[in-house]
Length: 607
Image (cartoon, rainbow, N blue to C red):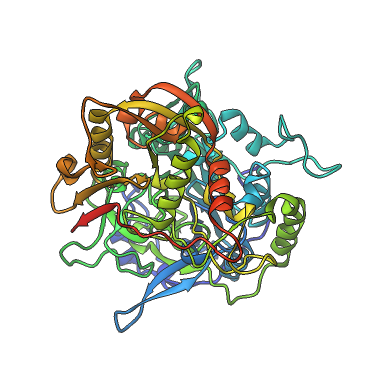
């Protein structure tokens, strides 16, 4: 794709209108870091009817779409909004029919508009996209006029060859073309992976950066994924690849762009943080104790060269618009737009034609809800309908019945009702001696991608769980493993939930019935798991005894920061997690006796 947009993009001014009319004094004071100090001329238009000195470029951005073409169901489809009286309201949001309308409306009246994304556009997708290896999502992003995205960790779920196919097109090597006479065209926007190189050659896997150009305005985009991608993706997905430090990589390519005369630079980083409030309209820069943002992105932002003017981030599925000081101490915008297309960020970058740089003090940014009370984009409705017809024979098959919502992704508690159901399904399916003889099962919380929602998603009727809905909860189709672990290794694994790489942001495993323990969040590190309270079926864990433990292949490989789980021996490979989940729904529910949300009483939490 040429970096110059062919379409005349436009956009509604939602924020600063006066940025381009800065006075000379303000302009000089607001010169971007590293800009030249000579020849400031007069503030607005200068010389003999030349173009205005500055031009406002609209940067629209979003992240972590995860193939959610249809509006996400249940609590996972809500965003939190703090009201003027301090109460918090849940607003249903997302769906590409509405995202397209939001972006197109936002572009109106803005001739300089560029749309960028922060990674995880695909992967862990609902059935509508996942069944077709995310071709529908790439097609939708083309229709949304996405200009550029960074890769996220989920872009590597199916490996580098499949990622290259999503970029370049061509039909799936095993399943072929899905529509007669139609060949998949690939993404008409570049995927950027500056910090991912091939082990054999040391060369970048994909383009490290791209330059967006219009009427002499040039903005460079550098894209990176988190350095820890190999820890959270199956080994096959990252085979033959090397992942490098985010800060070093961005600084290297920022110098390269700078040497080429590209002074305005935006970094797209698939790594993020956690704001003090989950409300999208929280003022991240409020000065109160405990306010602001924490997490990996803070140190990354502080280390990235002042040559970079703004950071679009992702991965944590949080909503924030914060300023974090760059290494020279100047504030710089760091944004993230939640996930699943529920929000988009609108950032105004004031571009100085004389210096070719962004006037940093004029940068304005805000997150906006992709509400579901606006018109749907007809082209996206047609796209969804087309793929739904292809998916319907598989998607609509009933698997079981539930009596109420069983929350997974939408639950913020350490122990999630749907996590218990999944872990119990894995234990039940793998407990028979010939299936592995499992005594306990562990499920990683990040692998639960949705809620089971009671309200019908289609014509199946309320309370019916379809194959499509079950797939949306567990879209990876991980093969299950049963392994031998000692009691000591089991205790270590539980402690690794809250220590080591998981200390700052705990990953609480979902456990099968019979396993109980106390999680004391008033303590720090591994001590938060109270070792003396860990019991299986009422008996204390014996450090010397061997236990048969069921988990998906990702956890069994030590993924998600659980090296203790990777030490298992006598491995037996069982059915897929999705097959066990569906078998459990079939065995434990009927239309007359639907499955109720289970109690969450396995982990006692002290806060």
